[in-house]
Image 1: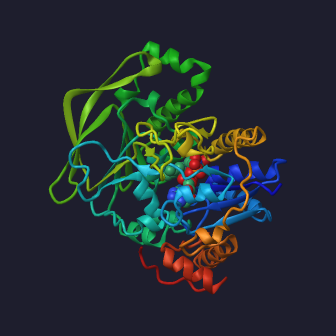
Image 2: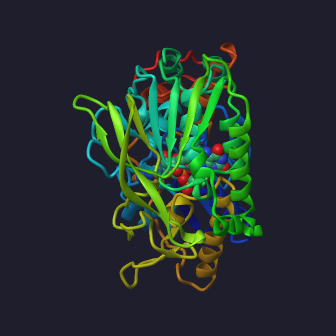
Image 3: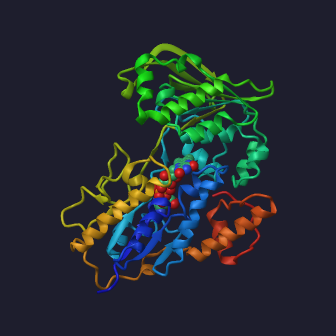
Length: 461
Ligand SMILES: Cc1cc2nc3c(=O)[nH]c(=O)nc-3n(C[C@H](O)[C@H](O)[C@H](O)COP(=O)(O)OP(=O)(O)OC[C@H]3O[C@@H](n4cnc5c(N)ncnc54)[C@H](O)[C@@H]3O)c2cc1C
C-alpha cells in the first residue's frame, strides 16, 4: 500500500503542530503544507508583536520539522485561488484546513467606514509587514487614538502606538511602520472596553507590560475599579485567580506616581460602548455610551445607558475579535465564523464525501495562545488517524502529481530560507532582528536571487 498523503492548508502554528503530530505517528504519512503567502508561520510572523521576539522563537520547532524528508512546503499557493479546494481533496488522501481566522471585525456602528477607522487585524498586519496590509496608511497626526476592545490584541496595538521610537527601532517592525511612527503625534491612547476590569480578557503579563511602559502615565477610571461584595467573592474563587491578578495589577498602576509632564498617556477606560464614529472626511471623534453591568458576577452583561461622551481622536481601531472566512464548498458556520466540526472532523458535508479535517483558529475560533494550537491539532490528527485505521478514507490510487495542480509560483522551504536569510542579514546591518520584505513580488525575487541578496526598495502590494 502506498503512503497516505495529507495536505495541510495553512502554515501557522496549527498547521505545523498538525504536521508534527502526523509525522510523529506510526502511520507513515507524507505531508504537503500550503500557504497563500511565500512566508510560513501565519500569525507568529504577522500577528505576534514585533517587540515580543522571544515568542517568535517557536518557529525553530517548525523549522526543524520542515527538514523531515516526508514534509514539503508549498508557499505562495492560495487554496481557493491557485488550487480549488475540491482539486486538493481529489489529489490528497486527506486534507486538514488550518488556515486561521484572522479577518477583523469592524465596529458595527455608524461611521466605522470613515477613513482612519480600521480594524486591529489590518493595523497589526500593517506594522508586522503582512503584504496584504502594506498599503494601509494609518495616520498619526492627531494626539489621540482610540482602541476599542479589552483583549491582548488591543494591548499590543496600544503598546505599539505608545512605544518609544528607539524601542521599536530594535525590533522587526516593518520599515514603513517604523518610518510612519517616527513622525507620530499620538500622545494619548484610550483603550476602551464595554465591561469592567473583572471582565477584561487580558493576560496578566501583557497587562503588566503595558501599564509599566516607560514614559507613559496610566489613567484608570477609579469608579470602575470599585467592586461590590458579590464581585469580590467571585474574584476570590481559585478559578478566577488570573482576573484577580489583573485587577491588582491595575490597582498598583493607579497607586504609582505619575510620570513627568511630557509623559504620554494610556487611558484604560471601562464600561463604555462605542455608538458612533464621528467625522465627515475621516475619524474626528468616537462617541460612547456609558454602560452599567447587569447579571450575575460570572456573566455580567454591559447595558448602555443614556449618558454619552465623546473622545476626540484621529484614529479609531476596532479590536473586538477575529473571524474565519469560508473556503470553497467546505461547510461554514456563519454565526461563529468557523468550520463546524467534531474533534476536528468537519461536519455537515454531503453524504458519501471523504472526511475533511480542521485545526486551529478556523476550527475553534480566534482564542488561545500559540501553544493552545498544539493540543488542538493533536486532537484533529487523532481523529484523522482513527478514521484512516477504520477505513473511512482509503489511500487513493493513481492520484495526479501535485505540480499539475499548481498555477502559481511555488516557494519551497529552501526558497523561504533564502528570504529569511536576506531579511536577517539586512536586519543585522541595522541592529535589528530582521527587516521584513513586505511585497510578494520582492519576496519571489529574493528567493530566486538567493541568500544575501540586497533587499529591494520595498514596493507595496
Ligand atoms: C495580533 C495577534 C497577536 C498575537 N500574539 C500572540 C502572542 O504574543 N503569543 C501567543 O502565544 N499567541 C499570540 N497570538 C495568537 C496566535 O497567533 C494564534 O493562536 C495562532 O497563530 C493561530 O494559529 P492558526 O494556525 O490557527 O492560524 P494562523 O496563525 O492565522 O495561520 C493561518 C495560515 O493560513 C494561511 N492561509 C490563509 N488562507 C489560506 C488559503 N486560502 N490558502 C493557503 N493558506 C492560507 C495564512 O497565510 C496563515 O499563514 C496572537 C494573535 C494575534 C491576532
